[in-house]
Length: 553
Image (tube, rainbow, N blue to C red; front, top):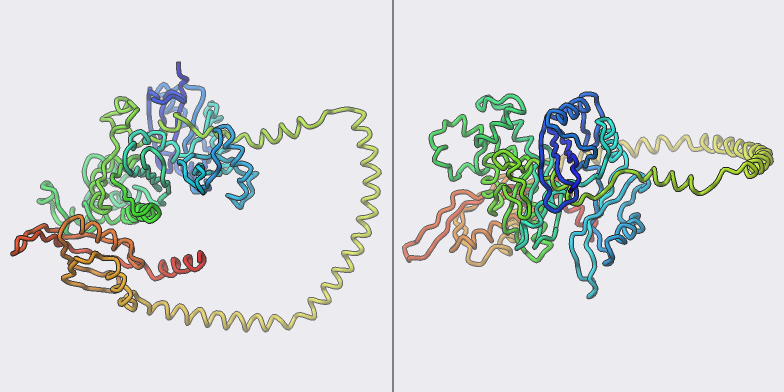
């Protein structure tokens, strides 16, 4: 019979708990619960053990009859460093030591303060030799220790520690057996994007935005009547509080046609609050396509807290150009019946953490300490010899230290004299600072006058280079912020290709498609007409990207 454990994810705003089987392929969920995380309890994934957090955890476990002795935690934090590496193929038990021996090449940090974990992403060919592609993770010991402390505070033993991205992969890999699919776990303040090809992770990245911006917008907008966080979450699950695209022209559902302008404006504000989230997801899709010979994501699944946000899947479908839906079934798992209405998305990381956790328990310091203690024995004779020898050495060190002191004093006096000789250099440095400030002011003044229209000829040249030959631009308009074009093509596939090429243009930040029509012209030819709005990247962002390109040359 499988061991039952607690699996806990402590988020910035919400803590989620599952009681489930440990280390089985299809774990059964016996109970689940969630509660608002007390303020100040989590700082970038690291737990601050407060009385309120401990009391709330204990009361929630007691009320839901979750009496397991051991606990597994899953966590996402920017403090966890990660690096994709290529390593020789080896047996599973040898991979950890192989990575440990080469860790200093992966991370230029003091690794004595970190514990390493890894995820095998797949295999690659290097000079006809098959090797592993792995994601190596460096967890700060202080982060793991904070979870050990909270486990002890609630009277539990820490069984394992898992990375949220790894937990998600355990749950979705069987769902993504064919083609290229993307799973996005949208949490409160961050999201994890995982792209899989035939059950293998191709790319996994974090986006520093979640669903909280939209929830806060709902709370701050009186027309929704949901001033608290819990009310905003409940309303966004029950009703669609967002428009289905960023553009002013969209296909409005029948029930929206009679809504007043104030409500539609409020929904547009909620949609706009998710621009950074959706733009970040789109950039990862573009990066994947550029690294994999133009291979495109065929389907998108959303899970996590965002999977319950009504209308988000349709908004993503319209803005990303790929069919998107909430993940409501998991191949190889039977967890839906344990959740009301089958809505398990919020708990996906909790369930996945128990399938095959990374196993970190933060005992690296303890192991090092025990190894040091086992290296010697307490013998009285040896101690006496060491005492006598130490006394003799101490007398010798005193004599040497006195000589070193006299030498250091002479050097100090020499340095003081030298410093007095160099006093005049202060005025030279002051003139340099004044000149540098003047240069910076002139440079900043010029930067204010820059705008993208100065490079319009380059924009048009890039447009001619990348656009399909049979595209027809009917109108073209430009402002300081964007370029708007009315375009005709023959098929919707050509429209999709054109939009993708526009998103790949160097100066374009985002592309919005509006007013799509599919008609037959006077010559019985099919004509697809649509309008695109290309938002420029900021001048600062362009400058940063150019600087990075120069560094990589």
